[in-house]
Length: 64
Image (cartoon, rainbow, N blue to C red; front, side, top):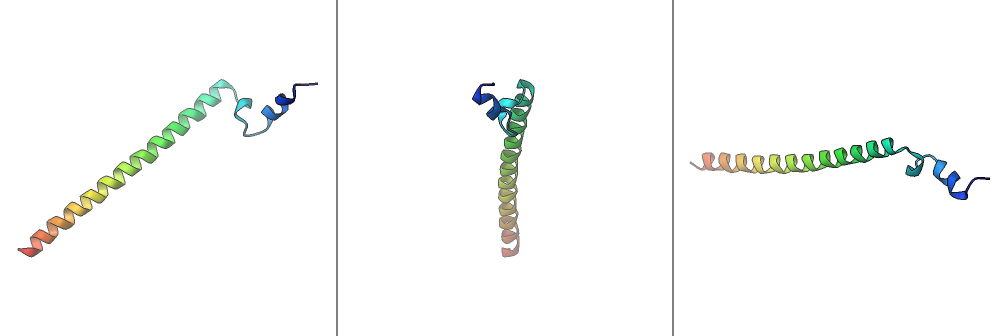
């Protein structure tokens, strides 16, 4: 008879059933995903500022 916890660990999606390598891989993948999200936030913020800048410029040109 196995230890009761052993079976729980064998359930799919339970991280303890993964080897150290796949754990590290998943962790790295999660970090990469977060970096991607951060980059998209930065880029969209930058694009927004750029659009505002152009709008201001056009408005000033039209005002002349």
